[in-house]
Image (cartoon, rainbow, N blue to C red; front, top):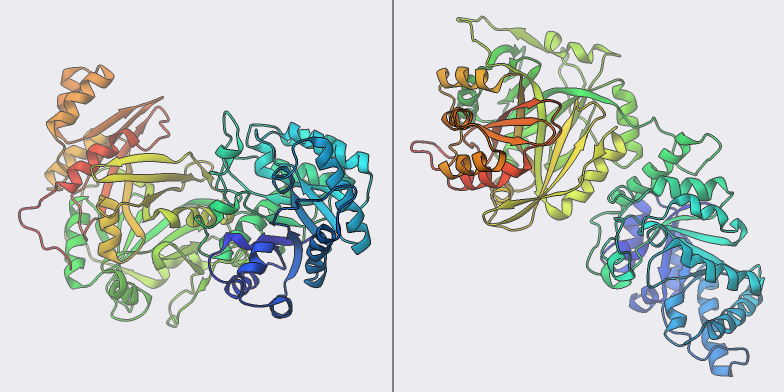
Length: 630
């Protein structure tokens, strides 16, 4: 029976708590092990009742203890031991048992002994009318290692003995999903999905460090699922870790992440082949984002003054005011920055919780209704609040650090929000733009264990692809940076995971009581011209040490006059299939800052080589006369 399933070991807590969260996340099936039963406070009757109460079916029951003594002529004690396992599975409602080769290999030294043990297990399985899915776990993770298991199972020839296949074992050595086409489909009883990274050399020990939800690693899970589904597999698709020991150390925070990851993967496969159908919710395709429409800051009077000072020095101008609220629109190029100083509503609540900060992002999409529908189907929580008679109800979902993500489209009046809700302001004097055209990227800082969750949030809802994680060296530790990009780079996000409490990123988290947007990068076509205008507007930029420019000259063999030009303007530089220039503002709001960048020759990176120098300068930054928000 095809269903979406999850192994209980993904979640922390007692069995009752796990079942509750798994059910709320819309799963209909669950994998349990003997250890789950042993650790549970509930007896078999209570556990069975809990499964029923939460609307969950036991998709497979994993035998976790050894099976010593099984052979062609086992004694009564051994027969009783194996029968108890079948009885437990049947009592809890499962017609499928998972048997890993490691259980047998603990007690049998040769293949012939394992063959005899499996033959007896198949015999008992036929007695109970319960199928056994055998998972061969090789010492070197290779799809080829399925061959011995297939030969044994085929030679036994029992309809009650088949295979369980885990995607991480199948793919983590670089094997292609197409190699699975040779596996007899009638012998595939159970499929487990687990992401990770291709390892060279591949080994069981290596793969134990790669248990991830689909989308978090780089394995070709879509190809894996497509090959098996196209061949006719009708069983469960289950999220499962391969290492029970690691499972106790690497929980996910909520089952919604798991559901989002699994449904998004199966949805991707369905859209690639109309002949393949899964029991997933009907929903629109991943959403194409064509840009950032606006960024909204929650402020009070003091922080409003701070951010208007820096926006003015960046040559932004206040263009509009809300018709009925203390809300302003500041603009340059296609960059819209909203300052919200209302004393009630979401923005005020965000300010009271996190201080002055970016509380909302508005994304341009083709259809806001489709966007909300997909996000909701994948477990995102919708946001709504009362709006005035002259205001638009802009669809939104909750985002990183209790912020909001709004959706603006051209299917409705949403794209006219600035004309409908705002009045133009009288301009007393013209402001010369500094050359900022649009938002280049947005950097969101969070705890490292949150980063993988928000990765799934973005890539499952939007047409965004991830780049490899980069380690950024801070003077006080390491920050892990994960880049996400829309197909043409219209929206770029940097997710920065912080572990060490002394890093610049971690101090930002502490000061604002949680995750949030730490910096916004603005794109210029001519960084030197922009710098010249910013100098005249008294923009306060981050000062870089002389050592940085000495190293820069040696690293790239740059001309001295060019390096002097960079140093005079505190411009950072990197080169890698193109050139990248960066200017950083002095930090405000206990760690938030702006960045101005220029990309030349289609440079695609983010200046990660400069990050350590920037972080050191920020950590050492002292402003002579500044009012810090507390």
